[in-house]
Amino acid sequence: MLREDVTEAIRAAVFEELAAVGYARMSIEGIARRAGVGKTAVYRRWRSKLHLVLDIVSAIAVQGLPAPDTGSLESDLRLLYEVTSRALRHPVASQVVPDLQAEAARNPEIAEALRKALRDGQDGVALTVVAAAEQRGEVRAGLDHELALDLISGPLYWRAVVIRSPKLPKGYLAALSRATAEALKAL
Amino acid sequence: MLREDVTEAIRAAVFEELAAVGYARMSIEGIARRAGVGKTAVYRRWRSKLHLVLDIVSAIAVQGLPAPDTGSLESDLRLLYEVTSRALRHPVASQVVPDLQAEAARNPEIAEALRKALRDGQDGVALTVVAAAEQRGEVRAGLDHELALDLISGPLYWRAVVIRSPKLPKGYLAALSRATAEALKAL
Image (cartoon, rainbow over all chains, first blue to last red; front, side, top):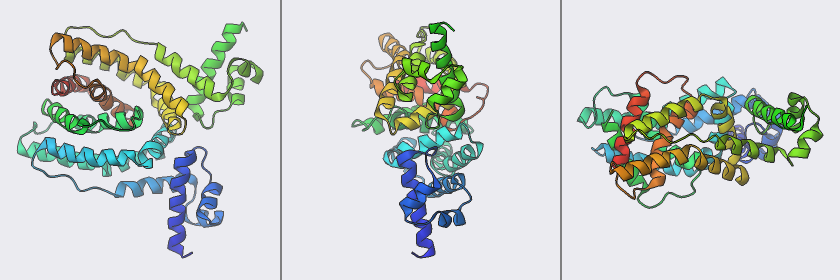
């Protein structure tokens, strides 16, 4: 294997191991075995299991989506939710993210990496949507941005990751977008 | 120790071990050691680590709060959030719940127990609040209850458990209650 291919094979293996056994049970041995490389190939690239996972989390965050720009808050939210609900069905969200959240409760480095990944990803896009609505006068200029982000991101995460509802009923995202737009207008 | 005291000591030890090391790393040995009992005392009461944890989760759910009944949706939500935000600062929410959520991604029994605990606890109270608002005509009768629960429970959970924000700014719960009431009225 080429050097870059080995790196990619290890990254893919970390991802699969995380989804399969979780952070706590995951070992460098298991990753190396799954990637078909030796343990030293892993240690040459990353100092520890923690560093490997932090690297993966950052890589996920970088896959930033362009912010929707439809001209109305409700339809911007609708587009954002379409993309987010697809992302939440991915194993990263349904297995790896809760796992890292659990780890974050005990490990400040993981907590900080997750916060950064959120800020650069989902929250970054949501902020752009809110700022556009402020500029159009759809919501009050200078509203509490943190609270706005909680209102935008919380409900779908709760449904997909906490309740672990396998499928959203028809009309769910439309109703959620309408309700959230009204919530933001009340801030 | 009396028989009941041993049971209680083991329950407390499970709780502390869960918070300290997490489900994946927790062992019956560790629990027995922390409780100051022998391993057989644990196995006499619970078949496995899984059963012990399921028992703890159910016990948490049973601590059901009475539903607020102030006569208005916004102030009912406000009271619900006051109680929930305190509960979310407890180690159960900040460490044990994310941990069990992570485990639930791989273990359907834990997933089901968590869903049941939610239904009997937080969701049960929120449903009562929504039903009262329907009766008063503050929200549309027959609105989507599942979506209503996502809108009520998601934002605060996102803030406390996902973002892990250590402290809510002044006025946060009041603004959240007002915004969520408006969201529910749009359903």
